[in-house]
Picture (cartoon, rainbow, N blue to C red):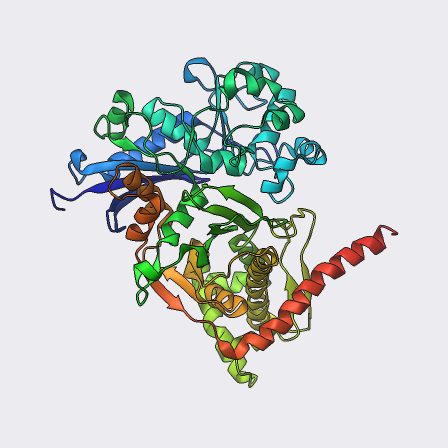
Length: 548
């Protein structure tokens, strides 16, 4: 590595691990490291973590990735993390969020569902601010969790010095300066970006009037867009813990999926010029256990059942809309592991990824044997509604469940292959449902779908999306786009690029373009009509069973 080169560190705290990467100015990931973090599950739907455990893991992975360079070459650091709730008492000490009273357990994880009752009460008030979250808060957002704390752990609630979204905790821990990123507070805390302030009426209506005192000090009164410099950079103590120089530039943060979107928005096909590449025409899919569908527009788009428009939440000057599927990779794993042939395939092929590869190779053989023109025609009579765990977007109904129609007496691996194909297609019809919902609310047209995460490595999943949405699919050459996005924050804050959008374009790199199959457009149009009918049928069945 050249002694003259500038590098940036991206830190990503996911659900189960902390990761760091040393990233070059062109977006190449030079080094990366990962360390698991602890999660406590004291009872069903309760998930708790520890900021001390998380920070310790971050220090270890950062030290590892910078070991091969002079620390003076590291010009900036950016943090992203899950949208989990951090609770601190006076002098920044952890306050328990656990009924067990364990002080170190001071983080309510994003996927914690303890606040279902509080969520329903907040939504019942129908405050106008809810138009920015598709009409209702999710029980994974922070305001319902804060109300739960007030009612169930009053000692903790009464001792709050600061509450943070986890990404903002990390920038505070690194600098000692309390700033909040618009990304977190707009997307997960019901901050009013249009008025550029917290909404006292909304918070008091939710029963959280204590948090409005002293200019909303406990929630944070200095709110900045992502990619801005925080304070004077790394504090003396944080610099020592991370192995970096005091004063190294620290950027305002992003939520983890949003960092992935930032990295991908700058990615382009080899053949397209950077200056003709319009970020507004891209939908970024962060596709793993679940899927987030991120897109940004210059004009606000209010779409029912889709979160946003969030002003300046990823790139300043743009509004973010965020859709999602609660289960995606997790759904395909469920289909695989609950099938009678799974044990036989596991014994023969080993890792699950090998089984998926085998099924992907088997499907064209089955289509050829049946004299079909394309693999997709194998599901002519098999139709799936994929929401086994409820619908996040665009229906926004957590009580919806899955439907499979077209069952026959086929057994064995052939039956699994067709079932797997039908569920993979259903996830892509779900993405089309999100896109068409945005179009109904006058969103500008999409030109490209971009993919990162575990499912981006599955060619069937990506090609189904291209064909069903009738849009080209771009897979970045650099798969660690969340880490690239985090590093781009540091690069923008350090002034290496003139804006966060420029940093994204410079570091997003290029990718492989998969074009949609024009021969299957009509077939998928017909199947999409059936897909929408399945939703209506489910509603009708419920109505019948409720005696309506």
